[in-house]
Length: 82
Image 1 (tube, rainbow, N blue to C red):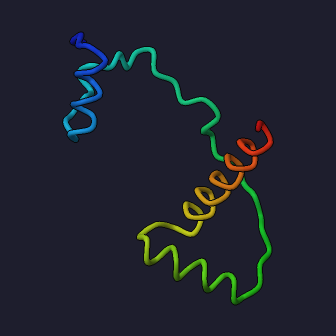
Image 2 (image 1 turned 180 degrees about the vertical axis):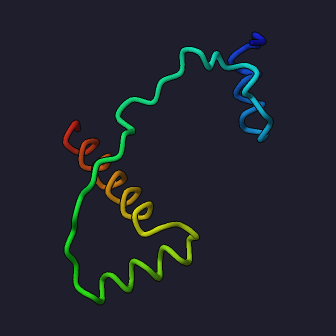
């Protein structure tokens, strides 16, 4: 693993450069990322709109819903903290 300053690391990241050689992957963790199933019942119209939006974005409906739910939960947490 190579050592560089935080500023140089940020610049390389922002410029889209490969920064993997500057990360100690032996200590990397991915907490709370194990999948958990959730069943949601929506109207047929809502399902079609979700499928259309997911297709436009090039993602799965599951990924779209997960991102939207995360954004909503983060916003709710932020406003509750104020």
